[in-house]
Amino acid sequence: MTIVSGSRRVVAGVDGSAESVAALMWACREAVLRDADVHAVLAVEAACHRQASYAAAPRHAETKGSWGAARDVLRRAVSDASARYPGITVRAEVVEGLAARILLDRSAGADMLVLGRTQHGPDRHRGAGPVIRACLRSAACPVVVISATDALATDQANVDHVPEAWQRVLEQAAR
Image (cartoon, rainbow, N blue to C red; front, side):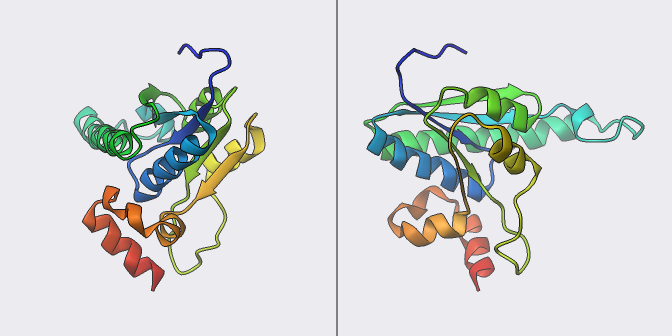
């Protein structure tokens, strides 16, 4: 990856979840304010990183299919972000490796790293997952962590980038 010296960047981690899409849109709005470019990163972890070394290996087709869907969501999210924010450059990158390491590497020299936090269960204030914790601990730039519910609540004008099925899930989670 080549980074132009002096260029401003906001890095967004995108994994296909509604929260990561909301984080990308938040990153785009921030990039407009900072006159920066956006770098959307999807980290694809190899099968060996997702299971114990002694466990049976997953079938290749299952793994490929799930990440293929995430790549499609990344393309769609970046396309929507580029259309909504035509004054900024949104670049997408799919990288194989551990998500935390990839995000930390790609955010080196960036203005900030933006990540979406998935909410499960009734406690919306629960702790962040391991990737977010690693980024908060080790990033060389500020890290912004948002939830899709929070992002959508503060910017209802930009909900059309989230698929309707995700919007229904978010509405149910907010109740």
